[in-house]
Length: 364
Ligand code: SF4
View 1 (cartoon, rainbow, N blue to C red):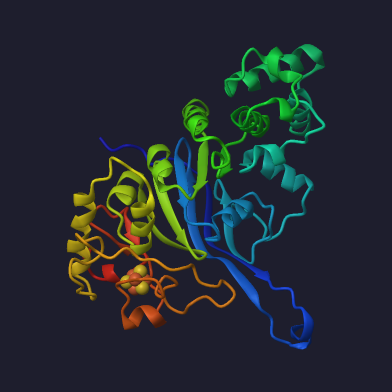
View 2: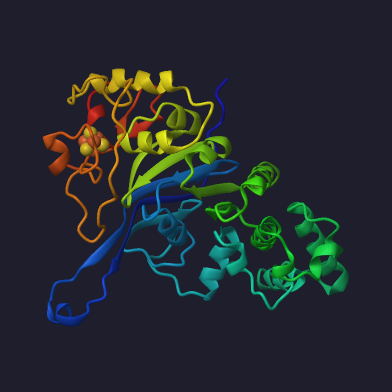
């Protein structure tokens, strides 16, 4: 018996965002138009009842992807489809179409303190969200029940203890739970969580991640979990996508990508994450795949003793030609400097891929 394919809630294809660079001084006289290549040609799909994690270091473009999906930024090119229905390149913020989209796709920000207005209490924040999305009910009793229900969903009970509190009276974890409750007030289908635990104490991160997992299961939400911490992606996500310098470089189910990373950049992330369960021997087995490729480096990608790449991410105003990782890659070949690697299959499952020339012809 085959399991039915999960329903695609939100998908992006060829998603691209270039920010123009403001000219100063003499440069203002030049006709040259310079842009920051924040996001280039990103494809992703969020499935109902599943968590997709977007992993990468600061400046890799992952938060820009979340804002593009939330329609907070107009995209330069590419498509965004909600249940297969295309969305326009730019949507007027605050318009009817934008509000209808927001009802179904909600964004949770990294800093729960900045995302809540300090002069209003929890009741105000949640009531406002319920009213905006037409879910406040009729009369005080229904509103009270809706507020209690929201706080119950994020495990802030009894509701009466929290409704009158102001953001400064709550802990970081409680503030993030209020921000999540506010997002749930819209009854969304997709939740875009932009580093939702990175500003919280380590001791309470797990509680918030467990809450998001519980919501995914109970409400069948499609969740995009953005993080720079690949270990938390392994714990929480079903699928992991890795971004580097504005481009996707690897993707697959979370266990495979985090335990047997293929792309040299993912390997860098995994090597730098504290993960006591890491099976280094499994990661080493990837060397066999890489060794069969053009590189022919001893051990290939991830082989025992393979060098871990260092260095800095490139400028996104003039990103490197070919593979953007090539200035840092210990396996760089001539081709990497000029030709952009496509998504190439890794292994034989068909779901694990890497944009790296080392895997050209390997899966076949
Ligand atoms: Fe390294 Fe080349 Fe692969 Fe890029 S395409 S990660 S430079 S081997």
